Length: 136
Image (tube, rainbow, N blue to C red; front, side, top):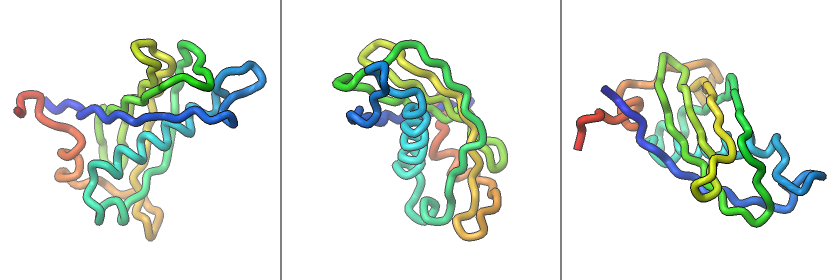
């Protein structure tokens, strides 16, 4: 069985992220998810793969649990749940300490950087993101 290797992405809340209700604007969370997912890819994939492939968001399903504020320290925990062909399915959880702020399920398509056409990830690349549950 393969399981996701968690990736943690620190988020800095800027004054521009705050809306008229004095908390983080809902649209900012999607930008953070994109930043976290692409950072995850860049941290694990070899440099040649990072140059050769890009990720395009296909769908986001977001659930807001609590608001975040200007001086909060928040972290995104990124988990790739599975890869199927050119598609990757992610879960991104944003926390403030132990508090769940937002959870996002998203699907992404891997595309060739030159042609912008979908491309399947090799099993080698998939294995970099998903490890055997019994692997030590």
